[in-house]
Length: 279
Length: 255
Image (tube, rainbow over all chains, first blue to last red; front, side, top):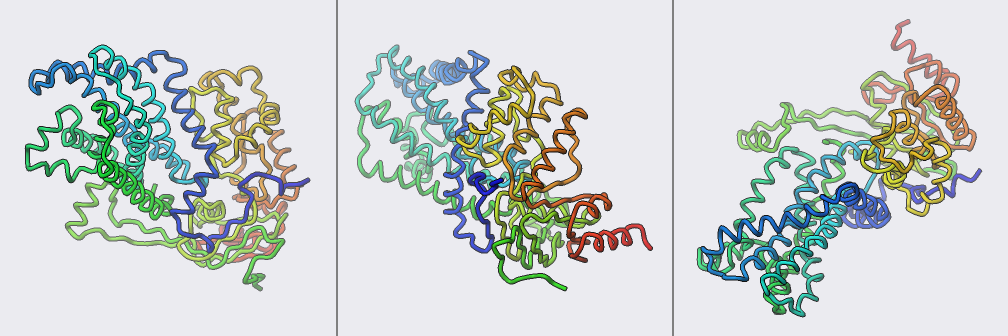
């Protein structure tokens, strides 16, 4: 009998040869890519499979929020007919950020029982959450296009840059998710505090309120310290404004997104060895 | 009487050198960030640490059936976690050659809304197998689990016996190099229990290294060649299973 032919896990493990954990983790995630695919598949299937309503909800959610906000705020902000399209564009980006970061906390709590019993790359659940979010966003683009058509907002060629801005948003969300997940592994109550932080963050970012308002108060200071703003801004520019962001605008967005990801990844992997001691 | 070598050899399966695990517990129960911050400000975060494992040295050869004895809380589970790389030791070196069977409860990670087939894929990838490896094993898993046409039905429609059978089939579909037997497996009905026992025997006969953790001294004495006795995280004795189990029985039953 040949038991040496058994799987990828049958290698020599030597705790004294562990290299820099952030890079180790990256290798592990690649080795476990099929797991990440299965986790995304599970989330998508359980959400949509046996319920047509599931798909509908993903599309109706931004649509409903947009409708309410349009009715309430369109008179106040005087943006006229394009206001609904402005909101739904921002909401698609915001929902991606808020839903993936919040879901990563739950994935972490769910995964903690597994971490105590088997070896897994600790980042896999968080990475999978981002993947699920990307699939959901594809669906949320359907009502977005619908509103653009109804309100007569043109779809510009710049929308071809949407995948790039989406990747930056995903990188930023992954970074924040990793930082939050590290905290939640030690302090489960962080999961309960986070929605409050999210609400505040939403109002501090031009999602439903036009950007001009923020530039007028406190000398635009609020926008400058908000790392999410440049990332959402390039998303909105290519989708709604129909403008190609300048090199500086891309640079700032990419800097915040990739910087957050790098910090999150290193912070998480430095702490993840002690997860099994706590959770 | 130490049989330690400074480096693992070709025929070594498990090699632990000076392995210690220290848990650092807050003196008061600080479970939330809020409490933690409050106590931090008050300067009241104090820890006491305790050694779950203390300077453990151990070499297990390939194909050996090795027993682990000790009372509850002696550090047996911690030792197994270190070996299956769930826990990185505070100190010392862990060297493992080969795939270690999972410590997972059977069917952990199963989702009730997914079909049996989908759950096989999810569970097997959690155990670290690739899509290709799973594809090859599907017929064997189905054959062993005896789920029949229910395999395409959601897991929530399964009886608990069926869930357990599916979990066991996936967990044992791959021959591990190092098999951890923790507690006695009791899965499903008597007939299936028989099949489980047979599968365990075939693992042993295939030359896998077996770590047997049991309270039953007789089991360890009759099955194992060598054994280790743990107490408060310290290794009290390593040696022939008969001697170690003798010492353990003296320890718990007195003279």
